[in-house]
Image (cartoon, rainbow, N blue to C red):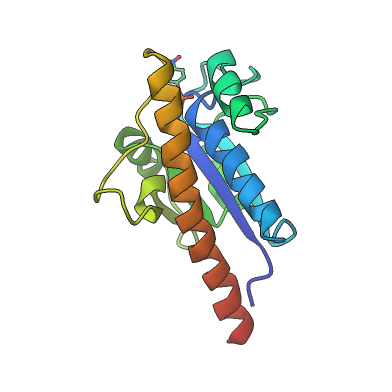
Length: 164
Ligand code: 4NP
């Protein structure tokens, strides 16, 4: 029986998209009463911002919807796959970067928006770093939609294994 699922959201810098996804999904998991069954982190495939807080624009847009981005950036390295069951890439480039590391059999690796039933196949959460306010709002919208689908999928996985 799966007691606990460990989830990591991964973007490039770990200062915009993946911390946003982490905060949104953590809130949904808390609201569902599943905090002791689903552990959540985020990381970046690039190391440029390691140790930095989330981008001030990402924090401000998230805060306006009631989410606090409190973590600091960490770099996803091959060994990190041992710590997670589900690894969710924000875009195709991050997915390629993760696949270049050795992915253990136990890890479910996919694009995050795969869990949004309204998103086209292969859809990314676009990088908002070099754009304007709209991009940060779009990230929040996309992460909220994908998080709902992800929660359904993980809840089912926990229940199926409980009944097995
Ligand atoms: P993120 O956004 O991958 O969503 O955290 C970016 C942050 C920084 C850079 C690129 C994307 N950068 O090139 O520094």
